[in-house]
Amino acid sequence: MKNLSIVALTAVLLIAGGPAFGAEVEIKMLGKGAKATMAFDPAFVQVEPGDTINFVPTDKGHNAETIKGMIPAGAQKFKSKINKEFSVTLTESGVYGIRCTPHYGLGMVGLIVVGTPENVEEAGAVSVKVPPKAKKVFADVFTQLDATQ
Image (tube, rainbow, N blue to C red; front, side):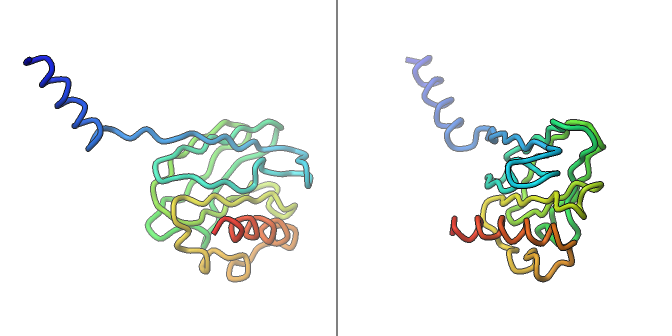
């Protein structure tokens, strides 16, 4: 009977407040994607707070970093090293604009939505100055975001 009580208590604790294990999502950094040269694949992802994004440099010369003005309030910016795999666990809900530093002008950008996209207006490509090719990619990924709401 004592063992059954311990098992029941353990189950209640795990359900109520056990550690949450977030999902992992992979974003490839490509020299040529399906829609463009120099691309994140996928360029749009939706995850939950606590999920981890793994950036994989499939082709050489890429990194991933947040774009100023395109992250939620209170969120930590990040920047990976060129040619290195990089993982980041995102905990703040909102929209995160990302870019490859060397290929930003060529339109290598993406959008990560964590939980509720609370900062869509602030992060919108219209309010943040971005290069023309990046603006075109953002128009596409923001359309994908609109379709999910």
